[in-house]
Image 1: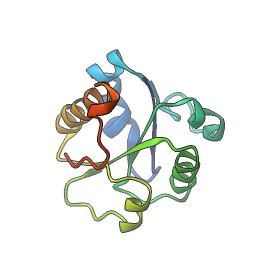
Image 2: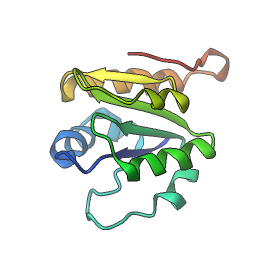
Image 3: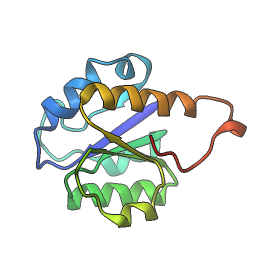
Length: 134
């Protein structure tokens, strides 16, 4: 499974998001696309998103460019998982593109919940359901 991870640039995403993801079983089991892992230059997500199976969007901090990426993903009917830190207010408009949300308290909690969610997606199609809140 190929997973694209989008996020705001308004936080230390390398330490708080990329490093925990890269050092986890998620990175061992699935192909993670971390668009700014090696460079802060503009990443051509419009070409990448159609080839991905899942979009994980860290939405604790708002971002116009992330919103554009989510629009492309939604247009391409991609499954979108929203993740956010506990205690952060997230936009209600996100529910227009997905009902899959994970609220996490720390990196370990994020990894545990994301693995659970993604592993459930790997089950046969008839057991999948939309609208997961973990």
